[in-house]
Image (cartoon, rainbow, N blue to C red; front, side, top):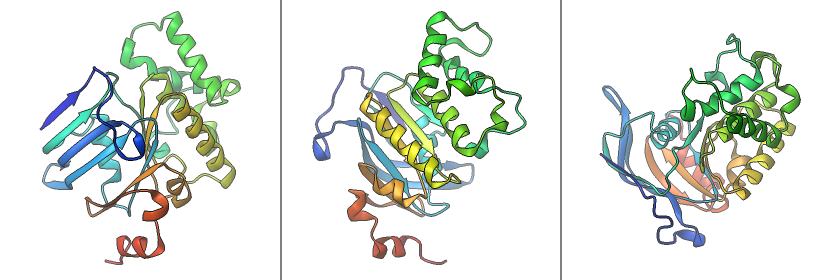
Length: 247
């Protein structure tokens, strides 16, 4: 398995005139004794929102883990065009309610990659955290316990933690699952704003409305890439019926 980071800048243009932020070919990955992803070939365009869509078990979260570097591929090539590690925001359920963390402490954890968990944050780190919280509209929630928040507030805190890492690649696992329509709309607007600020977003989602609003889509089925391209063209009733066939 070969992972490459290109620190020299842009690569040749991909669909719709965008350069790729990530490329992978022949990509397979999984867990001991179980292969989840099988020979994937795709490109993630820079400065765009890419939606990973598919039923449970299709490999969406595993692919996010590979892109984040927390799951090692078993074969294939993965190339990041950039010199910053990705920022990975897990599902809200992956962060325990019992953890005695305030919202500010949660966002400050985004700076640990630069400082480590035991070193004091610098003045610049605190400014970065302040900016991330302001962008997500959660400054007034700073002293609140994470477990006390509504679903939408908690999701914004986790996204702020991701932004505090100052990466140009933000990976989100089901960012709108379980949220009410108003909260989903706010998260969607925030993601559009983040992309406009120079960040590439990849989100795994069951929310077809969110997926259709993305710039591009990777449709996964049984760990394989079924389709890729424009969400409006891919996410049709007939295509989705094939992917979500009863087993």
